Amino acid sequence: MSGLFGVVSKTNCIEDLFYGTDYCTHMGTEFGGMAVLEPMPSDSRIIRKIRNISQGQFKSKFIDDYKELNGKYGIGVISDKDEQPIFLNTKFGPIAICSAGLIENHAELIQKLHREGVSFSETSEGHSNSTEIVGKLITQGDSLLDGITKMFSVIQGSSTLLILTRDGVYAARDRYGYVPLTIGKRGGDFAIASETDSFANLDFKIEKLIEPGEIVLLNNKGMQTVEHMDSGASQICTFLWIYTGFPASSYEGVSAERARERCGSFLAKRDTVKADLASGVPDSGTAHAIGYAMEAKIPFRRPLVKYTPGYGRSYTPPTQEIRDKVARMKLIPIKDVIDGNSIVVCEDSIVRGTQLKNFTVQKFWDNGAKELHVRPACPPLMYPCRFCLSTRSIDELAARKAIKELEGEDIEDVSEYMDEKTDKYKKMVEWIRKDLGVTTLQYQRLEDMIEAIGIPQEKLCLYCWNGKCPTGNIDADQKKTLKKSDVLTEMVV
Image 1 (cartoon, rainbow, N blue to C red):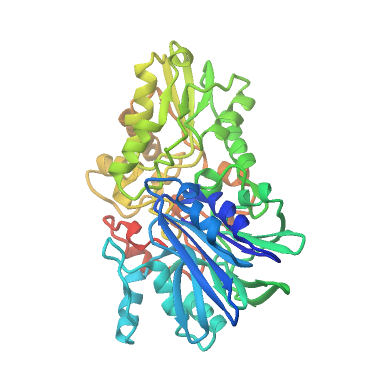
Image 2 (image 1 turned 90 degrees about the horizontal axis):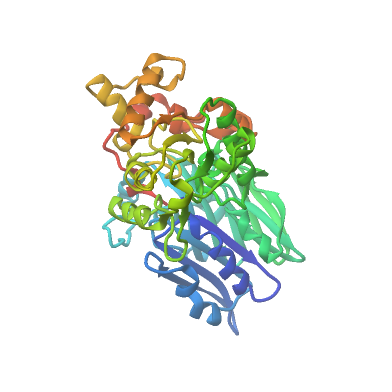
C-alpha cells in the first residue's frame, strides 16, 4: 500500500505538500514523488519530481525540490513499488496521477490496452507501472470523470487516486473503500490524505471522510463531490489498524493507537499466563502491548528498542533479503530488562514467522529470557491480500506452512483451521509455536479484533483471515484461480 497526500492552497502549497507527503513515509520504501501545477505567464504546467528513497529519507532526497517548486495545487506519494506520480498529456489536458491499492487483473488489462494500440513504458523490473495502467484506462473515457468511473468498473482489486489537473485536485476512493481518503481544512486551504497523521502538525482539521466510490474535486472554489458510485459494499483494509497505519492516524474516524490498545486488552482478557512484564515488538506491537499491560495489570517494559535512524519497516521492502536485513539490524535488545524474566511479547501479526523467529525471539533467548509468550493481535493469516498488499503469497504464510506439514499436502478447504475451537486449529498453533521456539503462542480471536476496532464487520475487509470478499468484486470462481505461488507484489499500485 502506498501513501497519498495532496494540497489545494490559496498561496504556494509546496511546504505543506513536502511535509504532508513525508508523513506518509511509513507506507512505502521505494519511491517518493511530488507534482505541482506551476503558474506560467500565459498558462500553467505540471512539474513532477520522483526520487528513489530506498537508500535515503524522503526529506533529504526532496529538499532541493522543496526549495524550487512553486504552485497552489499539488499531489505527493510514497510508493511501495512503482515510480509515481505519472504524467500524461491527454485529450482532457495535462494530468499527473498517483495511486494506492493493488490491481489483480493487471496482466489482462495490459493485453487489452495493447490490442487497442496503447503503449506503456517499463519500470526497471520489467513490469508496466500499475499507476500508468490506471492512467491509460482513464484516458479511454469520454471525459476525466467518465474515464475514472470506467477504470473502476474494469479493475479487479482496488485503486485509490489523486489526480492533479488544471481544474484542481481530484480525489477518487476505490469503489470498495479498501484505501481510505480524508479531507482536511485549514482556513481556505484543503489537504487530502490517505494518512491523517499528515494533518496534525500542519494545522489541518478533518473536514470529510471520502466514501467508497466517491470522487471529490478540490480547487480554489472549495470542495465538491462530482461523482459517487455505489458498489453495494464497503470494506476498508483491517490491517490499517493492526499494523500498516501510523499510530497517530485515524481511519473511518477510529484511532489506530486506541484500536491497538483495545486489541491488547482483549488478548489479556483471554490469557492465563503469569508473566513478569508485557512488551511489544516495536513499533507496531507497542500499543498492543500497552493495552495488554493495562488489562493484565503488569508492567509494560521495553526489552527491545528500535534504532530508528535509517531503518524503516521490515515488512514493506520488496525483497526477502532486504526485509531480513532490516529486521535483524533495527531491533536492539536490552539484556537488563530481559534477563531472568517471563515476558509477554505482543506482535501485530505473524505473516511468515521467519523474522519473528530468527531476529526477535532469538534475541530474547540470547539475553536470558526465562519464558516467552507470543501474542499476535490478529488471527492466523490464511490468504494473501488481493487489494492492498498486506500479505504476499499463500505458501509464505506461517499458518499455511503449518497446515501443509500437518496434512502432508496443500489443501483447498482450510475452514477447520480457522475455527479456534477445533483440534486442527490447536494443532496448527502448536506447530507454529514449536517452529518459533517460544513457550506459548495464543492468537487474537477474529470477533475480538473486530470489536477492538469498533466498526461493523460488514464494513471491514477480512479477506486475509477468512477469504471472504465484498459482494460483486471477486466471486468464488475467481477466488479459485489464485495459485499458491502467486506473488502479488508484481501487481502493486
